[in-house]
Every structure is written in C-alpha cells, then in structure tokens.
Image (tube, one colour):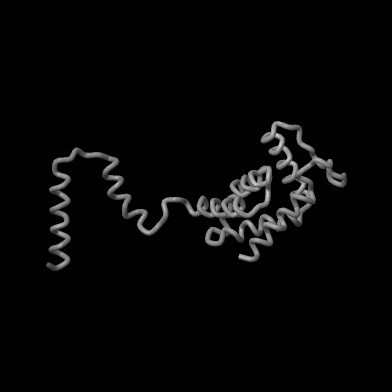
Amino acid sequence: MNSNNESERNREIQQEILAGRKFSLAEVIGREGGDFLKGESPVPKLLQATTEINQFIAQNLQDSSGALQRILQTWVTTDEAGVSQYLNTPKLALRQMLTKIIENRELLYELVKQVDFKWGQLYNERPYFQSPGQLPHPDDEYTHESVKAKLMSLLAMLETE
C-alpha cells in the first residue's frame, strides 16, 4: 500500500469514527492543537528556567529558618528580564543575580531587610533589622555578613557544576 492510499484510508477511518459524534469546539481545538505543540513543552521557557533556579536554591542553600530561601526565590521569580536572558542556561542567571547582590551593598542590605521581615512573619516574632554600619543583634540569624556568606556558598556550588 503506498502512502497516498494509506493516508486516504486513515482519513476514511477518521470520518467513520467521527460520523456519530456531535461537534465539539474542545475536540477541534484538541485535534488541531496536537500538531501545534509537537516537540515543544507546553510549559513556557521562562517558567521552566525559573523553576530550575528555584529548585537549585531549595536543594543547595543552607537556610534552617527558610526565610532567605523564600525571599531569594521570590527575587528570581520576579526578575523575568534577568532570567529570560539565560533561558537555555538558567543557572547562569542565578550566578549573575548572586554576584550582583554580593557586590552591591545596598542590594544586599535590601535583601537582608526583606529576609528579616519574612522571618518575622514566619515565626510571628519581631525581627532584628540590622542597619548599615551597625553591629547586628546577637540573636539575629540574618545579618549582612551571614547572608552574604550563604550567598557566596551558593555561588561556589554553582561554579562547581
């Protein structure tokens, strides 16, 4: 049987199958959409990249309270412009972000402030906000230096991959 006869036979079989069915817009979209996504994931590349980065953070960031992890993942999720530059190499986007935070004191201070606030929300306690140039409170889990050290450790893990 040649391919022309075969495709004609397939059309006939399809017509027989559909003959007794009612028209459904969902069915038409499903049939036509099948070819549309062939070979492609239905999940947008940006979401795939963001998910990969956030999973890496969850698996590799040493953060017993979880506040730093949550805020860092939020920053990744909201930095669509930064992540979209590295859709095929998402960990490079994380490397760029971590480097920028570590090298920019004001950005680091803002991150620590948000992390302290999140810690307060998570544990229903008053957070300790460290001001630039001041010594941290002795009970403050998230100081400028401790957060910077955790970010540097995460960056080092990225560079070994």
